[in-house]
Image (cartoon, rainbow, N blue to C red; front, side):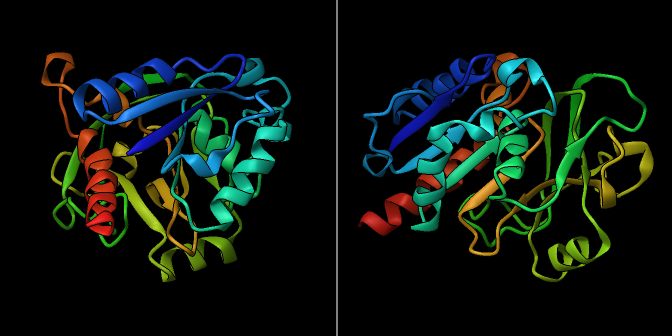
Length: 235
């Protein structure tokens, strides 16, 4: 695959994404500076919007980055059915760009949390989870102060009904409870997809769980799912 990694001022997980996708998964990756007007996103097989603190998280997390011209290109790219993954700040940017419903607000306890979390795969019938066993519990770290997913009741009902909730915070046994919810997200939501199934937003950092040397490789299953689907289509 040829994967583009978008970089904004304040992005800091871009190199981790590059390492995971290039060094571990042996895919070709390229950094995309958000002001690169010449870039043609259609030359890429997938786009990653990594975590970080774009523009210092001024106003709301992801709000200024959502106004960058690159996001207009991402909207067209995604509308054409191409895969896009937004991780942490990338998830916030996707919501601010109206590519995903809802928003990410301050953690309920008002604390920044940097720790390992357990997330259950609620839908493995997506291009991002197809290689993961149904209801598999993944151990993937979080690192955010505004990861509390919020939307009105109708939006939440639609997400539940349409199987758009891909990941949910749980304990190690897969039990959904408030003790395992690190930020107060409604229904313990950790990651969602759009209705067309080609845009994933998630708060946990899969790129930081790609190698046993750094604590675990569960996050790699998400990237492997995308790569496997791509390879099948190309055969």
